[in-house]
Figure 1 (cartoon, rainbow, N blue to C red):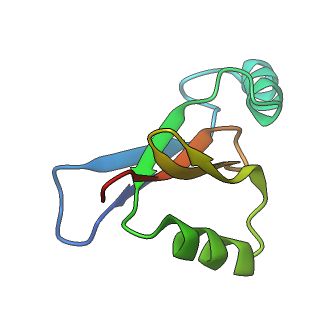
Figure 2 (cartoon, rainbow, N blue to C red; figure 1 turned 180 degrees about the vertical axis):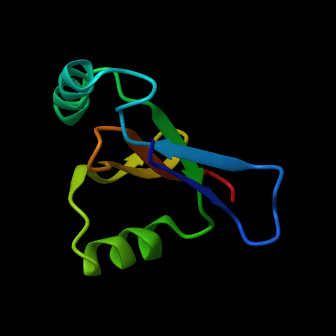
Length: 99
């Protein structure tokens, strides 16, 4: 089983667990089906992050070759953009209005 736990340095209370579908949780054939569906954006998780400067974060991600599912957009609640990780998880980064 392969997984990665991500957290802000020094903050052990808030972590994100990223795992690759496969044994021992599921057999190889099921893992292939799950990966195929996730890659198509079906059934993946959703992660929401906030930032104090959405435009700068967007430009930093763009400079690193990140592909976006939604470009930087003005919303009624602030500014945000969307992307998907290689496993199909939807990720949104937002700067809320007034922050």
